Length: 53
Image (cartoon, rainbow, N blue to C red; front, side, top):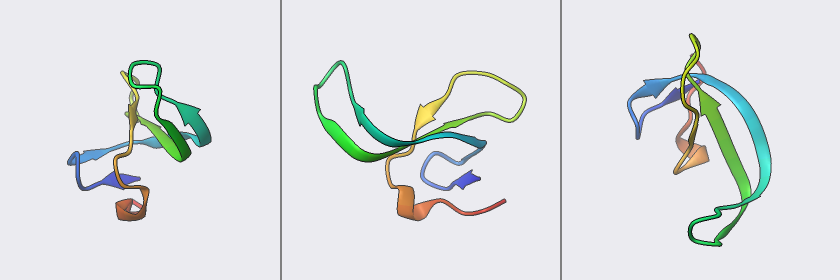
């Protein structure tokens, strides 16, 4: 997937409900993506902006 807001490409690892431990904000449709070759995953800020790669 291409995350244009982060200008990064990766593989979707998780889609679902998640609470950010630092802010305690609940995200009902959190999308976690990791780099294809490995590395640190990130939470997509706007899942509707994802593009298939």
